[in-house]
Length: 243
Image 1 (cartoon, rainbow, N blue to C red):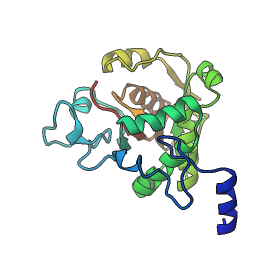
Image 2: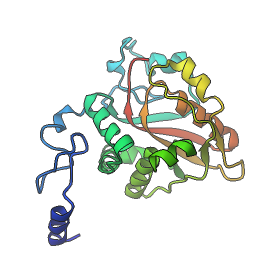
Image 3: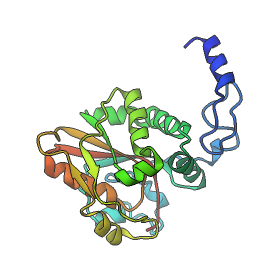
């Protein structure tokens, strides 16, 4: 896009900060100056399984390659890549995207994931990105699936196909914010199904907004592998710590 057209579009449809929603000055990056330092990007060392920043774990780090959660609760996905630590700024981005349909958040997160981890994702040689699905009742109420928006924005930047026809949520589980891994896993155990063994093939990257205990990612991975996926990786826009 030429500079003139870009300027006109910025005037007609001003870009907003994905964190606070303030209009961004012309020529400013994707985040306003006040919010940019509040974002906490995941940095090494990270868990080789889920991608969490090891030194931020509440229960400490023992110096190994895996976090205590992944050791205690083995996961079937081959590895995970995470963008942000889930602090107040990341929570604001997710809330605006998930509940207010502020889609600049999806574009921002996908752009940052592609910039910081795009080469790593492409080295996995994925056949497709698969967004974590939401139940049809929740989608009807909200109007969209935030994980699908993220996957499509990321796929466009990296040239990776997005498959929304492989994985489906068939049980509308209750909110799980206050639940630990075992409770979440029990909730999610039968929540997903696939399109069938003929459809699921190759290397897949599961895309989700927030990774906390890994129960949802594990349930999705298990059904994809059972249906015929060769390997499943995880790309999380933010990772939470604690439970």
